Figure 1 (cartoon, one colour):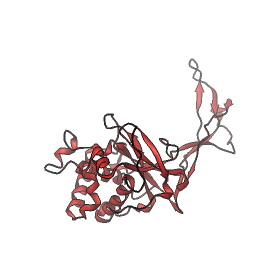
Figure 2 (spheres, rainbow, N blue to C red):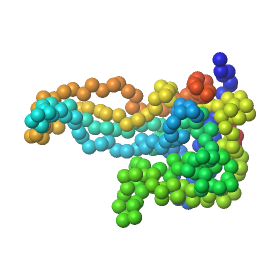
Figure 3 (cartoon, rainbow, N blue to C red):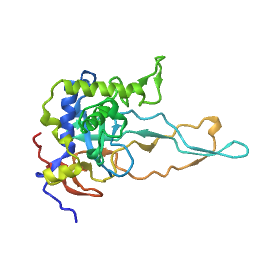
Length: 284
């Protein structure tokens, strides 16, 4: 049975990541517009041996969508036979204290902790650098997704000046490498990023355990949701047909500190240790 350690003895990994991100945005001009008070870092489950992202940037400041509806057509005639109620999609609200959050960045634990440069596309860009720089690249990558001009994920321009539907082009990766090198060349305090040098097992040996902020409904977390419009607009002529009620699950759409907890992560599972509001800041 995995050992549960005290909240103040194990490393709070998401807190360390937040401190490092604050230092990065202060030192890298391209990211200087980011207000880290509006960015929440949290942990998600991710096994090292499984495929999947190391981290993900989530935008929760998008405005409601335009009204829409689902519809069904007759296969033979193509005529609309029924449609759903009008609905919109909305972003949840997340507050840390009185501070509203615009973006969240999630890290897969323990997968992120075990990331290495060797045998990855990143290795050609960081020749001679230690393995932990792969994690720094991932962190900068997710910060770079935050758009400086509008709510949402950063759009990348193509050579002709139009925006690309793919936000992960070669130019994106090259810009991330440039920013990682800018940060390293700025001579930051090595203690701020020292935890990145350890893989998951080494962190457990060093600190007794690895913890992080998650949401109480773990592994669930705040996401865009669908809401039926309280006042239904009249249908367009082509959609004047039978209306089906939308059966939507009851979900939480507003989150605060009370919805966050500290979980201790193990190789294949995790356990709640304490409410996030009871955590104490750690020194870097």
